[in-house]
Image (cartoon, rainbow, N blue to C red):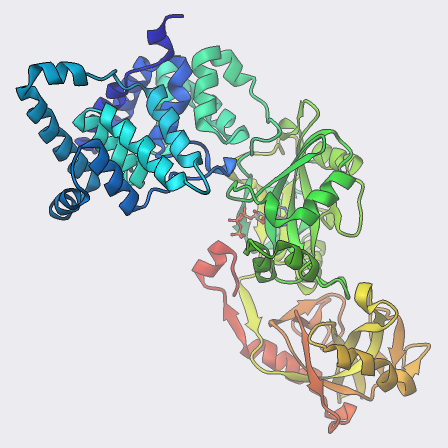
Length: 611
Ligand SMILES: Nc1ncnc2c1ncn2[C@@H]1O[C@H](COP(=O)(O)OP(=O)(O)OP(=O)(O)O)[C@@H](O)[C@H]1O
């Protein structure tokens, strides 16, 4: 292959940038792009795609960005145009754009040199090519640490020296991050389809390839160098993220089941961070919902995956959720924020442990599972994962009954989940990468009942703690008072908010009241490790009042087969001044539930943030 076919003059791209600047209609954009791709040799089409996307590589690679500060840029411009920093700064001030500044200075330099013919002959430079520009920009981006500032300046100045005034303008805009062309991925895919298939019909195939390998440069290169058949054969590849499948939203159980054609998997919709876990031998990479590499935030998940994923090469998906190790209870999404701070990750791992709930298998040892039915994916997922307390498959039921779905939904919420995901099981239930569709439907609430006041509840049972709280009571079962029949009805389990001192005092406080069977006045569905005669009252606050199928407070009064409960309850203090009969009554909780009911606004409904 000749030199020309391997590379392309950078001026071709500059012409393209210029044409774009004068175009607004999308149809024209596509035509201009088609024209560019037709001239682009397969060897450099990936780089051309990245430059159009205003980046050097896909974000998920986690490589540094160009990161050129204005000061550095001025320095590089002044070096490459033999001007002082002061002159560059003045022109920059008047033009207000570094691209135009370098263009003006370079033009001036060129005109000067034209006077001296001999000099201009000596100065004649080699033509810049896409490979050359890309290579230097890459070296600039990757220069890190001591001395890297100087190196970046020298590299950029060298590149600008070799460039024509116009080329320099666009290079500067690129390194400044200001070369936004307004060309979306969709337009790039349209153009690729036209160039390589002569029309729009290849577009879905290209899109599928892109969804399976979130790297449009790579997809373009495979298409250009290996052809249409190769792109049709594309399967997921360990290490390259798959664009996530997303869900539609509805809030009526019956309607949801109709949409998925009857029977469905109903899974907890956990309130955490989505994780796409790639395993390649003893290497693990974790990608976020936005396909960022978040591996460094979760060294504990890496360890869990290495230990418990039995397949040598696999891609699985799940939700990472914060939890309280002393009670096993799940915590809200916000608790994962500790993992975002870079420096004290080992402290965060210790203090803010997480669990992983897996919900899908996308690839395993050469087999593309995205094209298989949900049942097959789930079955294989369970086979290749060694399930532990912290690393396991999402809680689910299989049902076609709206009543059962609703009950499971309430259970999910009272256990800290956001709602449920209802997933189609039928023949067409493939993994639709990169698509929001009706194969997955999220069932969240339209309303939530914000908890603004505290309540006073009575201890009726206790559970032994785990981990640090092993052997001690870690969680208390709390009840409201029902004066109508003089009973105590359970509302929630509380394990948060206790100081170490509080916890030390609990066994002694409970001792006189511990019973080996349920006290007669207690109405409960769940079975604590020990029962406690109603005597001790505590003040409790929570995130919201919810309904739960496992608690008995005002059971059936708001909704059949559900009682009033508290989500994320927290202990505030003991109310030694109150007798159990002075506790908040079940009717008061019903009243609070109704009064504090608020519609979840459209915005929060869409983002899923119910803060
Ligand atoms: N069992 C589950 N199956 C699939 N996704 C789950 C599950 N549990 C929690 N999730 C989370 O729910 C999200 C799917 O909801 P959706 O498709 O609406 O994406 P989203 O726009 O990020 O969601 P939302 O707006 O609800 O936060 C996933 O990205 C994932 O993080």
